[in-house]
Length: 258
Ligand code: KIV
Image 1 (cartoon, rainbow, N blue to C red):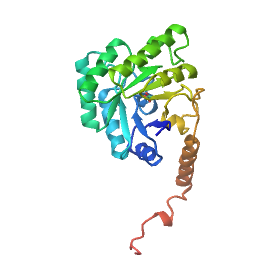
Image 2: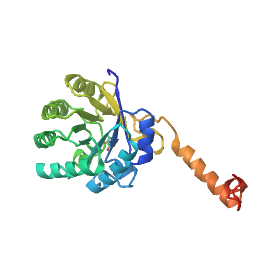
Image 3: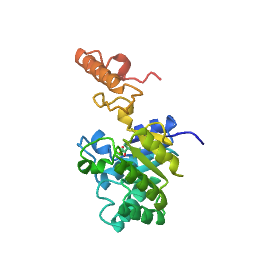
Image 4: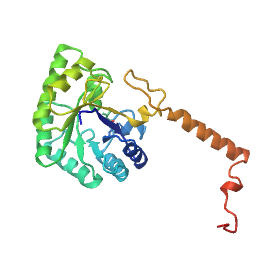
């Protein structure tokens, strides 16, 4: 449609319905689930069963919106066979349309090829790949040296050749992300990678202001739901303690008036 692709994460039916109603093009059940929903300190502890559990809830609310699920850490790195088995299980049980996996080295591309050959659409993910956070030395912008930028260009081309239908570019300098996006025929979806990507993705809780203390440069908050929700919780507590809720209007009379 010559328009940027709008993607957002969701982890349950309510948010999936919200994103579908809001006209999001692609829902990602990200393994950011670990941090934003399960309270873990990285994506590393997330399991295939966690992803299936949440992805099933998302597909119940997503309507006809395209849903992609992250393959969690060590569900695709050990062997191609295991990757196939796990991706197949995710597709069968969660009813999603595609999987996403991180990295672009030769082994990952071989895995992508095997999944695509089996009929499983795959999305790539380059730049800051959170499952490798310890190897990368933290959540920081990637591709700032000539060597790293060259590797990322190479890996993006290799993933495209391996058959991905799109690539998430996370935390890259805007000019590098734009150059990679222009050089590929498949779309890129950026997060912290500037306006030159073919689409954008944000974690729904961050974009809607549920995590007021999370303020990376790339993040814009499109709502302040933490404030609104906290206000609601406090008013509820106040009214229950003060005896003003529930009142007559919110109680059932012994005889139904209708
Ligand atoms: O897990 C996730 O939410 C992601 C997005 C940040 C792209 O991979």
